[in-house]
Image (tube, rainbow, N blue to C red):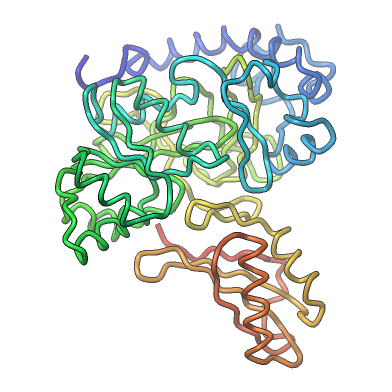
Length: 409
């Protein structure tokens, strides 16, 4: 099957539904051997969770609550079945949220996404996702290794050094954020480094506007994207059809009304809730905080699983900027350090095909020195650079919005 990773991808949807429903009692039962899940799902009979409708009756665990659970019961909030000492890696994402990586081939479920993007055995792929503590680099590397690809562990930063590796090894592909791929190509153009070998890319962790995808395509790189989180691995991915993101075979995706666990009608925008069948670190109805919608029908590429429109915003106002999550509580921390600020609003946008952010803050006595000090605090708290604009009291809307994501897909 040269066009598909395996036969699971082209199953009759009714067969998939039946097989996943049959597997649900086992994964719920296994999850409940962990104290965190036993408490969260108290009173639930795993045998009764034998359909999508039955699954929808279980409580949603909000991703925002995972960090609190981990503080109460380190390291993983009692949500892990496999003991930390038996994991392959112990990782940490911004938040902070801590995640394990277990043993086994393609533990994060990224091989399908890599295969759909055109990667095959024997390919050399440059990986510019973060390797230090966070899972990003390992998520994609595991899938590429499962396919038989060689990986250049570029990580982030050190652009010139990464270009030297690309020019020397001549990889056929790239995985990383779309923004950094553009930086690599722009810098190569200025410095005369050869990146012509890169013909395809699988990107994630940042917005991929149509304008950026088109620009990268004109520069010889065919770009597809996938949707992943540290708790779940790859949730969905694009194929060459580029008609929505196909749900991964290792998860069940529901779209629910934000703030509830109630599934919405097909096509309605709601929060992405995911159940994973990972035996080491199962997730039962994890609310990602991301907004999306289910598309009708199946993909023209032949993969028959459900499709989502892709990332459509955050249900909890958290925004992903340059691959890093920025949370409302971080903006509150900036405000706490500068009591002269009244109301704050972080505006996330795009400038020069790069994510940008500007902190708007009401202040009775604004001055340039204070703006610079607040900007330094913003960078310290979020680990991202952003502009600061101080405005008069009452200038910002009193709508409760702390983070305004104004990027257009």
